[in-house]
Length: 62
Length: 423
Image 1: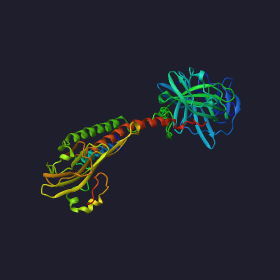
Image 2 (image 1 turned 90 degrees about the horizontal axis):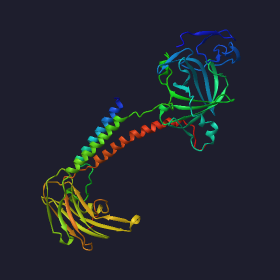
Image 3 (image 1 turned 60 degrees about the vertical axis):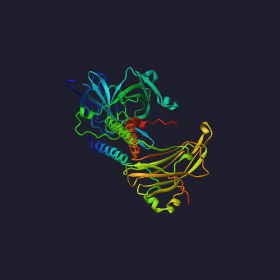
Image 4 (image 1 turned 30 degrees about the horizontal axis):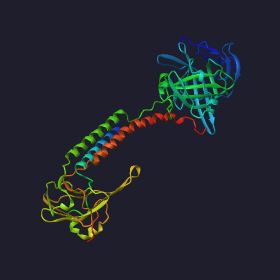
């Protein structure tokens, strides 16, 4: 078995391991910018700044 | 083997010349003075070609080698050349002789060795001439013994050097045309339709690559092979084992993906009914603080919108959200003209800061639609199977690409074809 083939096999195995790690750790799931302790602490400026941001819902300016 | 080797003296220069070629030899050309001698007429001098330069070849007259148990002796050498525009191709044809299997050719070009035999049962009825090729609008094809052959190239050759014995009458400066065809399987070899200029006999020949020729003839300083020969069976460097490897990884990724999906907790339904019946507060329990959670609002709207004020409070009373979600869904048309925009659901995605009972307040804003089913769901401990699906797709592509590129490599055998669709 040549070295190049071993490298390809090792890299692909590492890729599978990385994909499994990312999936089980929920990596990449989107978070709402207007939800969470930090977002609430930032207050209305964040809410008004988030108007129209896709995927987080439109925020009403009070 | 011939058993004994006879020799003659050149009737032009007196040099000793070995006689190796059997009873059908009718011409012997002296390698010293370039005299062409009639082997059937006491080696009478026919012509003399002065100043011929011997082409480079690892094979020499008198060398013997075996293929498939048949021993051949090199009895003649022809230097061949084709000139097209500024391009020049040169190769060497050696005539071979076997007492049991007759005459054959060993061609050397760019280090590639090719064994060629004359076909006595070739497709003479569909003899392919260069004129036919020029008239053809698509690459000429023909069938022979159940195999489909396709046009490969036309060679306009000229003999530049002659030495040794031949069972025909070669001449320096002789020209001709050879049209070659191939099948998609290199094992079928190459058929060559040879048409010498001047009305000499037309022949059909069949050629196969003979990679072991230099070893078979005991060449001490083998010539290195350059480039690719159309008769080479080029296999993909990454073969079936790697296909199985990538397919196995794809299966493993899919299996892990299903495991992730199976591990996803089911969503809890916090409310289901009319928006007007929403309670002032919805309390739900959260236990997983390590993974993202999601509150989802779903309103089964049709060409309408609705707005909701959403407040979320942590178990310790901390405000996590005081925000707004608008749900709108519009659609129309039919068939290919159908369209839709918006979504019937909105979400709040967050990582719970602590375990305990969370309080959710969802209030319908006035002016929005109040009809249609409405529900609120909560899911915690969310996993993301996307990466495993993506990896499975990538590995599947790799597995599929390996045979594809293998086929592409095999089709690269035709890259030297001179067929042009514009011709």
